[in-house]
Length: 76
Image 1 (tube, rainbow, N blue to C red):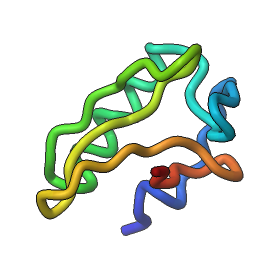
Image 2 (image 1 turned 90 degrees about the vertical axis):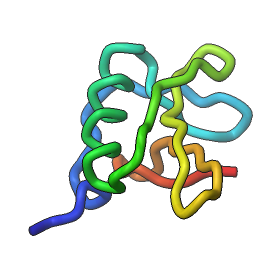
Image 3 (image 1 turned 90 degrees about the horizontal axis):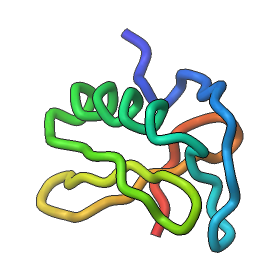
């Protein structure tokens, strides 16, 4: 099975504070649902500036995911 992190993200993006984020809430919510299944934990789409990031927790550590090179990437 191929990991979700290798699947291309073909949605429009926006740069916020040097991080590439989802431009629209709808696509962010869809990717949040996919990511939640992948990591086995709740993930939500949260607005950051004028973009949307995916926020959740892995092994008790709060994480935020954006986009890098058309792939999901954990950001600080």
